Length: 287
Image 1 (cartoon, one colour):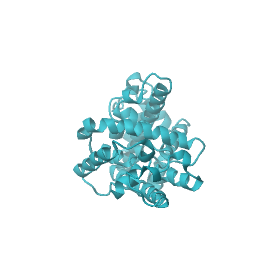
Image 2 (cartoon, rainbow, N blue to C red; image 1 turned 180 degrees about the horizontal axis):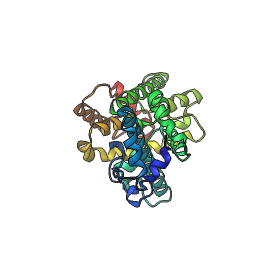
Image 3 (spheres, one colour; image 1 turned 90 degrees about the vertical axis):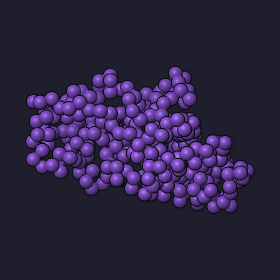
Image 4 (cartoon, helix red, strand yellow; image 1 turned 120 degrees about the horizontal axis):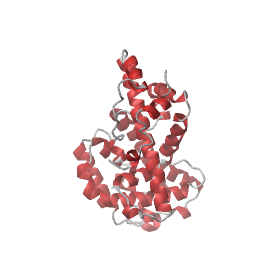
């Protein structure tokens, strides 16, 4: 089987063309548009060959699209992070798609960076097809999942995060958002409480995680500010992603129900001070 890395690089050099680096759609909506393989090219011949087996061709294209989408997100993440860190842009200057990349959970970002490394090595990139079949949730990121898997897997993560959040609130006596004095800021939390915070935000408890959670909250609040003008244009995939990053239950909600949940969340959290916003997801669930 041809290396996925070579196929990605041969498809009109889609990974290095300047146009590819331009934010042309919300990252949660899907991969950037691709250029059809030219007749006679390596990709064209390869896809024509595996077209004898429709399921294999479908998996191949899923991995190809997922890889391009993953590359696009990682590039946008580092470009946006650099712009904010160097002072070129403030969070309030960022677009929806730029903010979406900044608020991705630490576990997802770690997987994305690992996949980018794998895709640079000839040969191992093809293993993604096997991962897609046997370990889609554990090994791969949302970029490689079907819409049905994305809804299912995101809900599992939301459920885990909310359990951690509810356990944390119970240690404070299950306070309401108005009980600010009972909701400790991060620098007042002990080790066991911080572990629950990591779980609530789907972050690995690694060095620097506290700072990353603070930065994620800042970006999420900036994204919240853009929601009223953006939410009506979101499709189902975008609505699911935006519920997921806020740890709002997805379940079998329709598009209109998810929009309502997001609107309610933004309104519910709009006046929260930062020490309360840290617990926004479990507080929103119990309201």
